[in-house]
Length: 188
Image (cartoon, rainbow, N blue to C red; front, side, top):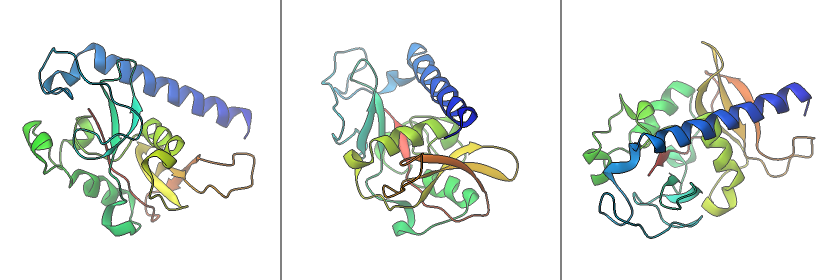
């Protein structure tokens, strides 16, 4: 991996971590906890646990009470789709009691982290790093919601058989008209 690409990925991950911590500092998650009561102590989550909305937990913050969960299967029965379709398909999972209470819809899912949504570039990278914990991934590319420009968005290669320098979990920009897989995520 060239130095520029490695630096870009590290900066992107750092920005994602800063955003995650800022959201917690603003108490974005106060509407729910895994104990069911706002402000009370919680039972800690562990990687691989079932999350509050039925997904698999693949990222946990320092409190062990909040993190990210992913759907246990790819959207549309593993069918690839364009980027625009991926955005709306991910948001279509917002029909559970939790997401209805959070007023999630197909129009605000990308703006509300507690709604099911297409993962950001950094969320997708965390997901790829924990793909064995979540399971059921194809050795293909998955979409992120992060755009490079008007015509391209970031995707990530989940192929564990790659023999190049990047080996595993390679991110690259793909044409939005390309067909890739989708795995929805949400914060809790």
